[in-house]
Image (cartoon, rainbow, N blue to C red; front, side, top):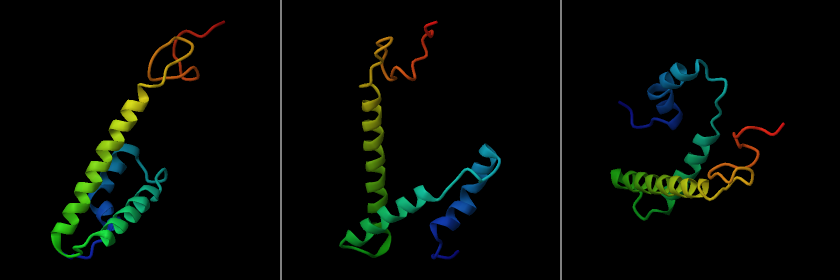
Length: 103
């Protein structure tokens, strides 16, 4: 097994079959998310004092997991702060309200 596997090759080999099974083709996907993650991870790697070994990779994974959990919590909290002015419901607005429309 080689140690020089790019993120693109990893996704192609390990995750592409999942996307094809779910969506049938790859035409709807871009690499924008993967590029952004690569930028973030590269920046974190070069800010670390220890650039060697598995420990650097472990620290990057821990940091990424922490950020994802915080983003999920923030989005979940934000979702429940929105109140519909039409029906006074929570987690949606007037445009996305599914109550019976006025005639």
